Amino acid sequence: MTLAIFDLDNTLIGGDSDSLWGEFLVEKNVVDGEFYGSENQRFYEEYKAGTLDIFEFLRFSLKPIADNAIDDLLDLRSIFIQEKIQKILLPKANELLESHRKRGDTLLIITATNRFVTAPIAEMLGVEHLLATEPEMVNGQYTGNIEGTPCFQEGKVVRLQEWLKGCDENLEGSYFYSDSHNDLPLLKQVTTPVAVDADDILTEFAKENGWQRLSLR
Image 1: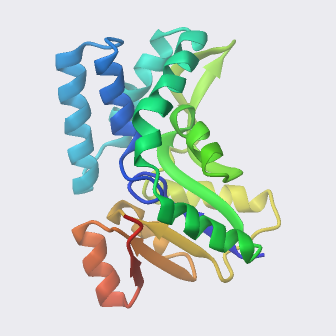
Image 2: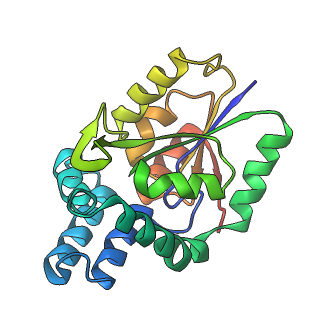
């Protein structure tokens, strides 16, 4: 079977779930609005610029789930999905996923955003396999730390290679769909890299290398 890999934020959905989760926490007064809002925006701008310190960001972004009880977090996440994610689902993304399903391909989402935020989104999209940054949990409570390698930039390659060792899949004939130049390390590993509604850096790289480009918007 062929492996079809998809970035999530700004690729399969029309927004960034990590940034939206931060905005949501501000709106619900779960975090200090002024500080958290400004830092959330700073990190998002650094991500787009390719200068994000992923470990600094994760210390920031995982603190709210460490500071709140799991039952409260699950309730918040349900509301978040309804209020923030439902409206940025993309019909063309569903069509793309379905086209790969019909071919018998194995679908995999790979995202820097943590699993707590992204697991229900992957489920909504009907994608069984998810590689995401893994927040550490001890005795039923998030700690604010992570497990393993952050699923970001070269870390996506590391995490994918680890995943491949545990299954029958390989990268022969593989696809990877992404919007971000942060994903160039993995885009260069697959048979068919596809730039989806891509940022300026990735768009230029795709043009220079003859990669396929498409829009799901």
